[in-house]
Amino acid sequence: MAMASYQHIRESILARIQAGEWSLGELIPGEVKLSKEYGCARATVNRALRALADEGLVIRKRKEGTRICRTRVRQAKLYIPIVREQVEATGQKYHHNLITQKSAKPPPSIRNLLQIPTSTKALYLETVHLADERPFAYETRWLNVDAVPNILQAPFDRISVNEWLVQSVPFSNGDVAFSAVNADQEIAAALDTRIDQALFLIDRTTWLDDVFITTMKLFYKDGFQLYSEL
Image (cartoon, rainbow, N blue to C red; front, side):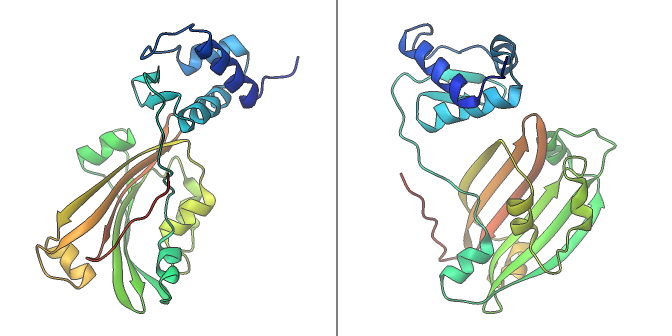
């Protein structure tokens, strides 16, 4: 018997939602249970549920599960930006400087995000992205090397870690937060701006199934605008 495709599972779960098998706001069975029910890999169920979430029919939260929406939600489309493309879209020339690349034990807050043991080291990188040789964005990043072992051979002298990861490493889920922050001394020096200058911050963590890949902070110099679509 052929293994069910994610499209088949999506259609089946949608039919069950429309038939009222689960009430509005109710949690549906988890990925492990559904994968056994449909006789497929958990990743296939994950893809089907992500498709339903993209359609605004379910809401998915890490560690909480998948819940039927009370009302259909229209979602904004967010993409992981390649900073080089953002710079080149302004007509400026892109360049990046890798300031720091080292293996180190991350602080507890980062270790918890990446869900790695206390004794395990992670890869830490700092990058300044430049537009016409002027600072455009400053990136700090921790990486779970066990999740991306070939990253140790990546040519970060020729390609930024931001672009290399987008092109080379798949992910299934992510958390992202947007906020305004004031530059501290280190960030101000990296972006050639004044201390306490208001900056736009993207704080993002991504993972593949149950394996956490990376957590990063991307500080954009004052004047940056983020665009999305509905």
